[in-house]
Length: 216
View 1: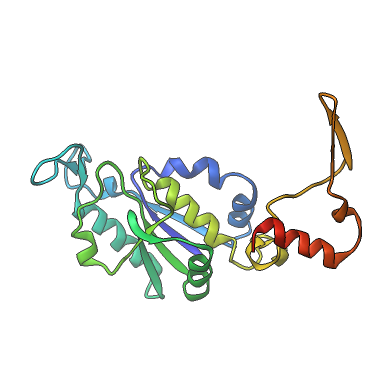
View 2: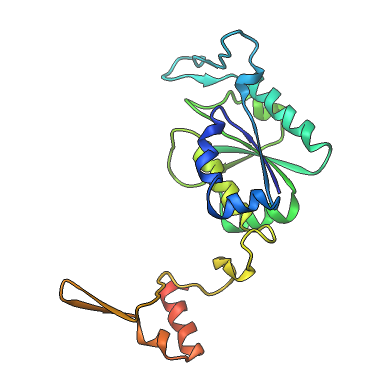
C-alpha cells in the first residue's frame, strides 16, 4: 500500500511513522508513504499558497492550483494504477474499519489531501474525483492528524503489517478490558484481581465474558 500525502507540513508525520508497527511496516516495505507539499508548486518567490476567502470571513484559504499540481504529481508517480483520492473534511463521510478494509482491498495507492487554515479552495474537487472523509464529529487544526489516522487504520489491513492476523481486534471477539500478570496486586490497601473467568480455562465462558464486556 502506497500512501501519497498532500500536506503543507510533512514533518508532522515524522514521529508517528518513526515508531513501532508503522516504522517496521515501512522498513519491511509493506507500506510506503510519499509527501507532496503544495508550497513546492507555488508560482511566487515566497512560496505563498494562502489567500483571504472571497466574500470575507476569518482566516486564510489554501489556493487550488498548488494543491492541484501536488495531486497531479502524485498521480504521475502512481503511473496509471488504480487509486483513490481522499479529501479530509469535518463534513465528510465517517471513516470506519470497514472503510479501511475496503480501501486496502480495492487500492494499492491512496492520495490523501490534508487541509489547513480555513480549508482548501473547493475547485480542487471539481478537477479531481475525490471522496470527502472525516475521522470524527469534530474540527482539528489541520488534516495531518486525520491523515495519520487513515494511514494507521488502513495499514493494519495490509498483509504482514501486524505480523499475526489475529491481532486485528475487529475480526475477533476482543474485550474492552484486558489483563496480564500478576494475578493480583495491592494498591493503597485494596486488592485488585484478574476476573476469575479468565483464569478458569473455560473457553466458552471466557468468550461470553468478552462479548458482554464488548457490548455486542
